[in-house]
Length: 493
Image (cartoon, rainbow, N blue to C red):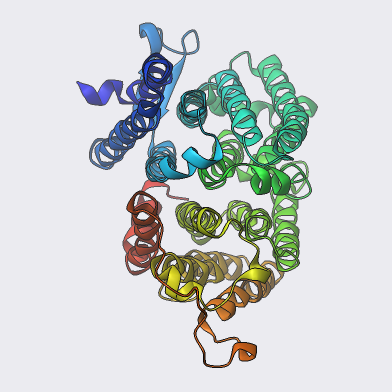
């Protein structure tokens, strides 16, 4: 049956299309982007089918070659992995549709290698989520990372330097994670996560286990851009081409957050994580600092892409904060924010790409009220995504922050609650300044409309994915109770 092989099908889809794109792309490069869209669409369909099947029939454990763990390698499609692969593959599908037009301007003639690398990166991301083996998680981490470095290097003049910097920092993070895995293998004799989880109570307070946990948290914290391990992110997101940023920014840090969820909540568990030192609280404090730091730095930026890059540092902090709260409301808020932020950030980076394509820049200081006439759908989508990021009802972003706030109240953690409230005000500062420029008449121009204020919207292939993301934020906002109910049923805490 298809269900029993579904985890392998998702990964193999990206393997297949990473081969098909060079084969057909060498013949006709225009086929590269449609093939990438088809591949990501098939994977998204498998992910949706698998999640529905999980809700009805439970988890799937797929053993490669029929060899059962601990000898063999397995993929695990449970509630957590199913939710994450559905989110990342659905977002990637729409972003790859969007990327067709920008690719013609940003990297003409390089479509074939670009989309082949995009498929390899998605293979790495999906493999990291689905694998039930800590070492194979590292293997997929390197596949995704190496592909990501190359995708980031395609962009503006400083992009290769930003990618090289990310390579150095990312390699250090991956090495720390691998050292942690080595320590755990030494004391448990297995790399399978399920087997290791059963053994962990016997070793959790040992020096090797504590060292492994710290190394893995720091290593994956680099990939998640958890403060203060975020240094690679602002330049990478700013200088990479629009297609790369819109693909990596909504997805990459979420996959790293998934690994932290899997390690802290599943492999060790909160009680064992905090048995020797309050590591979960330390992670939460770092997340809070990152939330405030990212928001303050975003206010200081005039370039929209750089503003959104610093905003990403802030937003990943919400997810990690929810993890550190270790209660149902915090967990629900974190998981809902994974979904919300993936859509919000993809939408906003795509909007910056729309403006760059039409105006030649995305410098906020040069925005004016003509944009509301020239790009009505683009700016309407920006308004929805920005208001959702700020956290105003009834949009999706409000509800993830609401559940996180309930989690902080449940733990009587008033410091974390204050961070959520303050950061929302800071978000309002840097988003409302754009809304003000676009929707309010410039007093120096009086009531006269700018000469260039005529309709000049981007093509439909760029516009409708952006609009779909914006509409999704409204739908998720109204359906938040249903989504959270499913999440709490799948992941009882």
